[in-house]
Length: 126
Image (cartoon, rainbow, N blue to C red; front, top):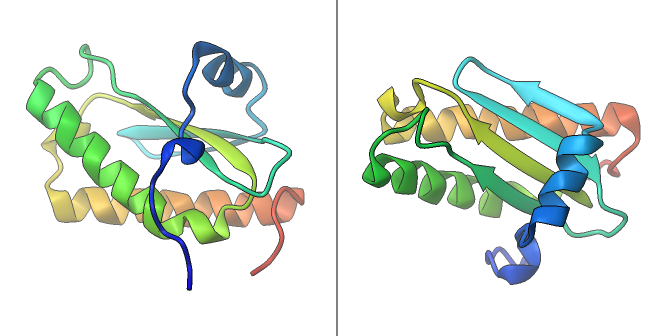
């Protein structure tokens, strides 16, 4: 059975992990409201980091809602991401989308990231 939890091993936990992705982003996908930066982490486990600036999403309730939906989307897509570290950066207007639109947006970007990683040879085809 597929393990689809979101435990500590699937998170970027410290500033160095974030810095590594920011400094050496090998893959980038974006839409108007969000940017995904990713790089190979040398393992078979994907990891996620989230950056939602107060400047872009004012209300804490909206930031928390976006993070919750993003983590759920990642949890469901992690089986095809392979060993990449991804930092998701929110841009202005992300808080204007409803939950269904957020799910659709995040899933679309995960698929684009997966396709780019296959072309770049960062993950294996499943």
